[in-house]
Length: 305
Image (tube, rainbow, N blue to C red; front, side, top):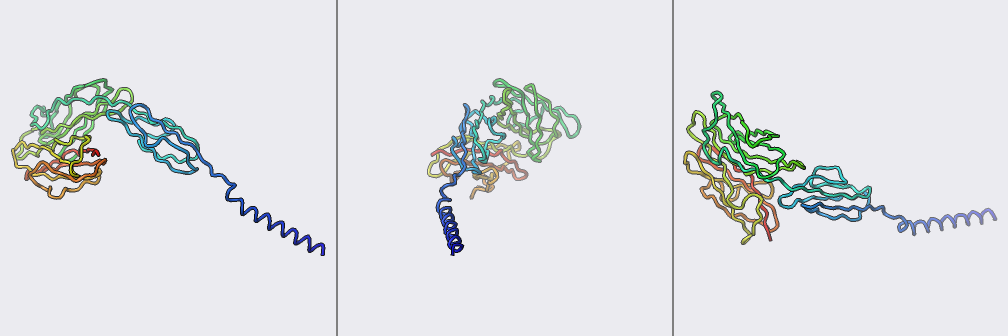
């Protein structure tokens, strides 16, 4: 009898313990949290100032430089990317560092959209040509970028410590070129405008038309939306005075450009495109003279309210 009583008493107490544990267990465990503080130096902004997050939360932070500034680095987080993902397993305090961009160089020679005959012949195929530009402020060094527009091949010369340099090029080819100015303090780079020229050699029957240049909007411009559209305008020339046809490509990213309806191989050099406010768009023009084609740089603009 006593043994049975002890057994039932023990069973009752065990059930009581289980009941209390199940009722109170959910509210007694605290979720571990960590604090994120995000700062920005002069010259830019960040997408969030931070907050308190549960362990394992992934927080995306983007550093956005102001006009004429560039992103340099992060303090408190190891990455050179403007956009980072922080996985919260401890407290973080990070700072996005920005620096002033150097002044862009002014291109001098070869001149834009011209026939260049100043190259010194090396052999039957190649000429040596001197590129010249002017400095507009403190400089670390320069990078010269030259593109063979007919083969879409690029030649880059880095670390130039003067405002001119000699380059060997195949003649009878259409080229474009620009100069990157490198800051002497933090390595930030500012690109000049792009020039196009035709390097003459022994002559050819047909010259490739010069790549189209944007008239409006200029690259990087902020524009108003009028009746849901933005007007694009460009110009191109041809050394043979051939009639030119244009194909307009447009889209929300550089990797997503499509032919604008009604603007595939047309003589018009102006078009209205449909846009949304507060958005970024890109565009490019193909110029065709009946024999050969050239492509403009990809231009970008931002729409306002």
